[in-house]
Every structure is written in structure tokens, then in C-alpha cells.
Length: 416
Image (cartoon, rainbow, N blue to C red):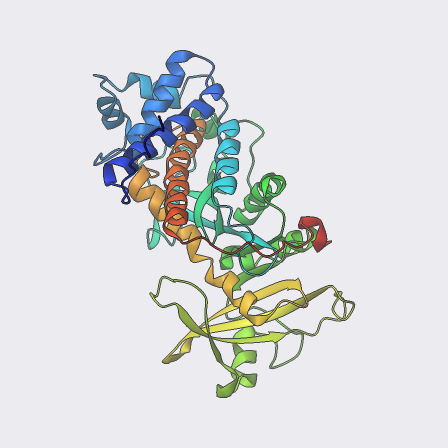
């Protein structure tokens, strides 16, 4: 007697997909469970992540506790404040999970490309003076100068998706100069003042060993792009980049050619602007007009088969006076089509932050301590990473069978 053929429905139902996601979440929670040394902490951490992914109006300690069936938030507060577990180990798990889950088989910016590492910061509205790092400071995400905390964030972006993989809390000088205030917020004694570009460098140093083989580009806004030391750091590590700079950024030490905006206005003719796609943007369009030129640099390796510098200007079609400016550095054979995709990818960190805030409670915390901030933010990053990876997997399943990916380049060492 022969066995009957299994009758598999041709359409995957929403319930079947939800069940699959639930199984994937349990596998992820089992993997991160080893970070929490006690069974009660493992249960609370799992309940926290489920609550961050749940349909709650605000994902604070009370609502997460109620979602888990607890009458009080004491367990969740203990998890974020006094419990003994390594938040940096959880951060590393999130990074590995994202890099593996968003791998696109080299279908990135160009053959041999791995993805884009995007640096940006975001603000968290916060009242009072006790919460670590809170101060009146500018944040673009809140639209001005407000009492807030500012987190410097790193996201990994490929054609499969994007998700946050690292974070640092920015401490203004008014905090680091007041050690008594720092002690009250449990800021470690060895933590001193660091600018946002220096914090970004710390994260990049941690992230690099975990990234896949292939060319890794870095994108960042003008807070980092205008910092010459940050650009030098990337060049030292042989990391190609395209970073935003201000209109008055110095390009060449020559009268009339010093500032990038004036240089573009003087040199760029209307027919020099080319329209190329750069992916979705905050402006809602996929196509921009670009002006790209190599910069003569006698002190660089240009001309010896290695690296080059470019200046890039971008404008929206129909709005010639509204322009953004970029410095880029990378292998001299890089085509223009690849160069413009890097600044076009900077929106990806904003999208990752938006997902983490709206769907995973990234900004819903009520902790005040320095380590409490890192614990909540990292748990929310884990929840958002799960959504990003599952969405990427679902997209792959919807796609028809693809041709074998192009042969990758010689790995990250090929950049040397």
C-alpha cells in the first residue's frame, strides 16, 4: 500500500503565518535566555519582549506587566534596574541576529557589496533632571530644542531590510562635569564626556567584526559628516562612506571654491545634473537629481588604483535651489550609480528607529538610571529586530526563485 500524497493548501493563511512567527519568536527567546542567569529573569525578559511586540497603547512597566498577567510592575522594574544580567551580551546577540537575518546574498549596492552601516541619533522626550543624560538639547526627531535624552544609534541596512544593531546614550557636559549627579543616575565612574562622532566610532569598532564579507559603506548625517576626525577614522579602517556635510563645508583651499555650495553653484551646469534612483526618502520620491565630481587630492591614493574622493550634490526634480551636499570616499572605480545609493540609504536608520518607537516601545520607558536606559533600549531593539527579520523572511518567500547570486568580491580584506 502506498502512502497518500499530503494535501497542502496552495495559500498560506494569516493564522498559519502568525503561528510560524510565534514559533520563531520562541526560538529567539530561547537563544537569548542564556544571558539571564536565573529562571525568573528569563521569564520576565521573555514577557518583556512579548509585551513590546504586543498590542499595547504604551509599552511601559505597568502595561507590560499586565500583558504578562502580573498585578504589579515590580518584576519588570527589577529586570531593568537591579537584576544581574549583561546588557552588552544581549546587544551582541541582536547584532548577530540582524546581520544574519538581513543577509541578501550580495545583492546590495554593487557586486561584492554587503550593506550600509548607517549612523544617526534620536531624541527621547524626558522631563525633570534625574534621568541620565536629560538636558535641553537639539534633536531633529523632536523638531527642535527640548528637554530630552539623545541616543546615538547604528543600523544595518541591506536590500532585505534594516534594523538597529547598536546604541549609545549621549551625556552632555553638564552631566559629565557633575559627578555627583552622575552617581545618582548610576553612570559608571569611567564614563566621561564623548561627542556623538566619538560614540559612533566606538560602535563601529564593535560592529565591524560581525559584519559579512563584502564592501561595507557608511552613511551619516552632517553631525558626523562635518567632523574631520570621524571621516579620518573611517578612512583609517578602509570603510568607504558618503556623509552629509553643511553648505559651507570647505572643499578646496582656493577663493571662490572653498565652500561646497558655492562651488556647485559656480561649476554645475544644468545639463550636468543626472536623475538616478536612490531608494525611498523622507520626501517621498525615489528619484533625485545628482551632481557628482571627483575631487583632486594629491595627498590621497588617487591615481594608484586605490581610493578617491567625491563631492555630491542632490536636489529634488523641480526644486533646483533646495540642495543637500555630501562628501564621499571609496574605491576609485566606484560608479556614480553606486555612490548615490549610499546617501539614499541614510533614511533606513530613521525607518528602523520609527519602527522601534511605534511598534516596539523604544521610547516608552520610565527608567531613570544609566543602565536602565541601555536595558530597555536593547530589549526594544531585540523586539524590532525580530519584526525586521521576519518581514525579510516573508518577503523572500513571496519572491519567485531567483537566479544564483553574483560571486562576491574578495571579502572585507579586498578593500585593503
